Length: 431
Image: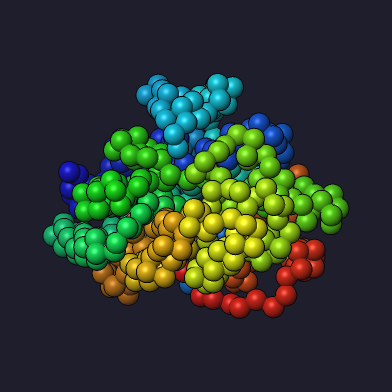
């Protein structure tokens, strides 16, 4: 097992680059990329880094030269022969050759496109612009680079023994969570922690801890493709808000806009089946989505709850399935927002036996160093990288939590009108 503290102490980044592979990314990015490659490959999209926790002044913490060096390194990466073989020949979600030959040929020749970086008021303005299939693959590496450089900046002045104690405390903290999770009956949980991890080595350690502590019955896999490959685990993931946001931005009329979330899923089901047929309903609010959803979506496998009150979201899903003659006990609900052990235990107890329950555990799995260093300087924070425009048109996200809304104010109001969104309850944005 890797001695993380010693690796941090002896840091030579060319041995330990932050992103070491194009498949050091979330599985759903590759699934979505193939769908985009097939359906909207010539769409021009801009992605932008957004730090929701403005009190963390990233440009004051992270050296610009180090950041550019790491981003430039990402641009040198390409698929290795072993990675290509794994993607082409492995079975994902029970399906062999999930990735089509034409997509794989394109992916094997890919280098990530250029980036644009500036400083403004203590923050980095980092953007990526180009064809959608290419720039969308910057999202996860960009977040991983920023998050780990922030960790390295905080750890830089620590001594060797101080680092050993820090990681021992963090390991103990996580293992105590694992021991509590062991007591939850019928638990099914996956690692969703790539985008806001403390570091690659730490995420890999956390995954190994879950493997040993929970076993394959309760630990179902990881969203990180590289770790899934290296640890012989299931790669977990379906789709994300990016798809409906871009499809909606491309809509020419209000009527087209209203139908955009369903066109995304119509394209999706042409390629996928089974446990990949998971609805993510909250991009323009869950209630609006469900009110207008065509009946064929009720036959899909399940739903991911990613904003708002998770229990309310699951209750809404159960009511929707029931009203359409579906048995909720045969449906899957995946909780993936702001999870930690107490919330996981509460939701499992509330919904076990009513639906099939699964959890995608993110930041508080792979980056819970809260309270472990002076001034809580390693506490996780809310950093995202989102599609902000498509073919020159701004994107919008409403969410079930208005604090997560993004887009120009006039467009947000237009989307609220088109999707019939009224007053919403604000909730603290959990990392």
